Image 1 (cartoon, rainbow, N blue to C red):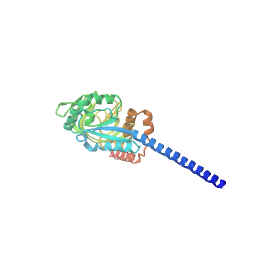
Image 2 (cartoon, rainbow, N blue to C red; image 1 turned 60 degrees about the vertical axis):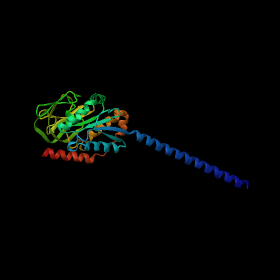
Image 3 (cartoon, one colour; image 1 turned 90 degrees about the vertical axis):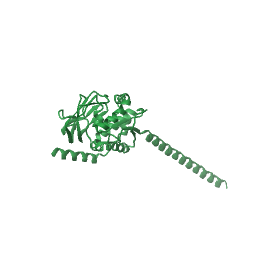
Image 4 (cartoon, helix red, strand yellow; image 1 turned 90 degrees about the horizontal axis):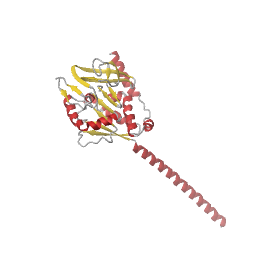
Length: 284
């Protein structure tokens, strides 16, 4: 009888130990899951898309889709804030921004709104917040824009450069050799010739770029990119997309976070698309 009770007590002790171990293991699993959830919730960036209803020529919205997906594939949530008015707008949580292309009229309307936050936007650019500006969005960051009729249109004057509209329009596919981003392909359709002394995206191999004289395309200042390339530019040129994402992470979090979060992606399809365009345009 005594031995029987001892066996029962021993079994209870073993069962209790197993239960405690299971609870401990479950606790560890819950803790690990909680930490993963917390880490994931921290991987959030905000992209300000200025005036998508007015500035969306030639599929420029595809640049937003590319940025969202390349963040998503890395476990990063990219919130897209569409800005249609700047009244009372704070840029405190803006991690990157996008301004697309539009007609002179639409661009002027957008510029009137952007004037209200010009100082804030300039400060963000100077502080290293990355931005992508396309065609008119690029031109109107400068100090001067002279239209085809010789009228001086109001611009933001954030950077010291000028654009003058001339004939003929510069239309067609563009190939760029870039030291920073490698081969770049895109499509241009603009009458403006932009003149500046800033760094550029690279040398024009085919097409025109900033003007029909310099063989240079775009502008690179701190982490701001200005370009005439539609297409949209980012899906076929993922190194530019990743540059914007990486700089946004660095600015909001740290260089270490950017290093950890920017895991390599399989760019096989993107590279095939770019290489196909390059060869077709080069040999055409």
